[in-house]
Image (cartoon, rainbow, N blue to C red; front, top):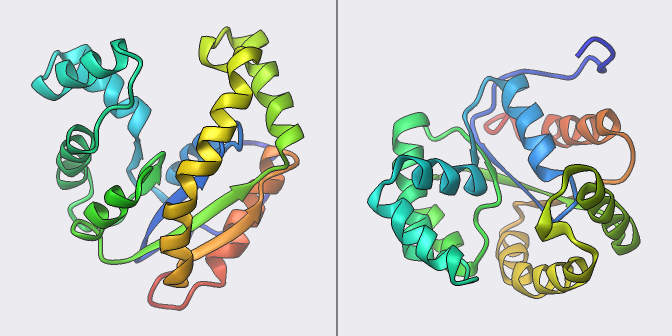
Length: 201
């Protein structure tokens, strides 16, 4: 990134969970952070697509639920996540994007990773709507169509609160401003990581 700011790229002892509403930019920022820190990146969306494309037993199970318009159940998602972390992050250091999504998944992740920091990208609802509607127009993503955007955001607000509360209660959650240019948000993430205790950063 020729014009990107000079961001800190020192090692992290903890795994990083990037969370935020649809359209918050967590996927993009997770990819950037994983490259900068030379850490594996786990996106549950990518994980589902990989298993489905390879025709694995877990992929077939996920496809059945997706085709029915349902969330992939925790037991299927968790099995995929466990396999991915054990193969790609044996030292317990990874960037997670889109996981955990439920309180039960938080408990499951506790059995896999001992040290995590959670960065929550906060963006005003009006800006999220603008981003998602733009993405639907430019990228042709059917799940970003205007008629379902508000429903997705409302569902996220309800379902994410137990997850955020679990990490907030442990002092592991940091809310960050997710508005503005990509590099500005990346800098805020880097600054938040720089303030972690020495054991984590």
